[in-house]
Image (cartoon, rainbow, N blue to C red; front, top):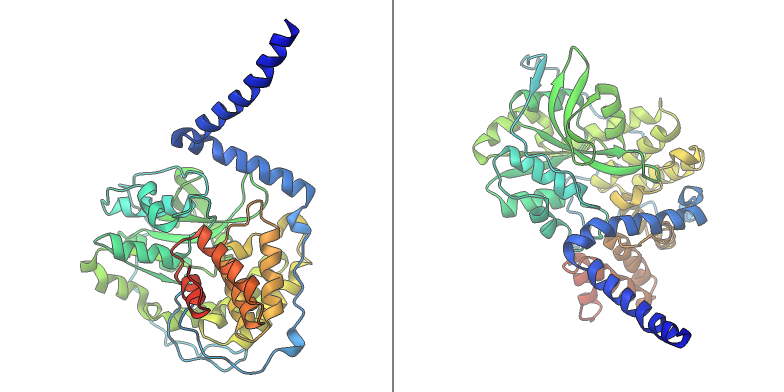
Length: 427
């Protein structure tokens, strides 16, 4: 009897494990359980090695060349073509002529959205499909994710990727700008056009700060609050003006406007000079400059980071590197529980700044710090930049390995394909 029981256990346990694996990989089951498994793995890793305790320290500031290099043709994040500014991160922007905007109502609420709760790691696709639903687009987050995140485990979607999806897969137009403000949001809503923004997020069940998208569809001046469609919290969530502005700061006041082609002139009128990407970057830079003189704690880190990002947009890599150095120097002074250690998941400006000022070791160290802090290191942009830095240092084996890993997580990631081709390697 004991021998029979032992044989049954010996044979039964592997069969049960195999059956569990088969059931787990059934798509509907996997979708429900995978995020719980990933969350558990993350909590275990973060408990053993708290990522907020890791501080990146730039090491090459003293050796940074005082020259601006040529803007690359194979950048992973398309940026506007502008005339570079003089490398001076403290420069101010020439004031624009005053004008009197057309008054708008004190309240407005747009309806007609199909709200979606996001699946795991699907914030960007879910919010994009919600925004599109207002314009009677009939897809959902699975349709947007198939384009935006061919690898479901990818942690981030860039604004330019959303714009590309809209312009290539719908009959609508889209644009993305930085340096937005609350008044601009309200003007779009008053005109019947919702706005998609990228912002910081913190909530129960999450390990610290992270990035998030949200659709702004209403405002109420009397109560000083916006109405938003939130893929995590739910439909028609209320958020007061100061809180939204503070959370928006973390992403350089980035916003995406989606609209029918026949309303383009109206959208341009609302944007005014913000229709020019160069001007929006200048406005965002001035906001960041002002905020670095008056903010503290984590908000000061965001202000310095934004300052660097806007200088990258203007192709002033030396000034950008200086600003990012200041951001990372301040990071260690931010209370650990508030540190935005996921920042490089979403915003890759420091890689541009350090790479194009030939600070290749800083690129490698920053990328390695970012990947090491992840429970599952799957950021294609990060592998790409580390691979580029290795290639610049002549460490081709490491470069090829990183570039191929980038394609593992995003198989059609063009910058990695192009760089491998230049190195004579088939992707």
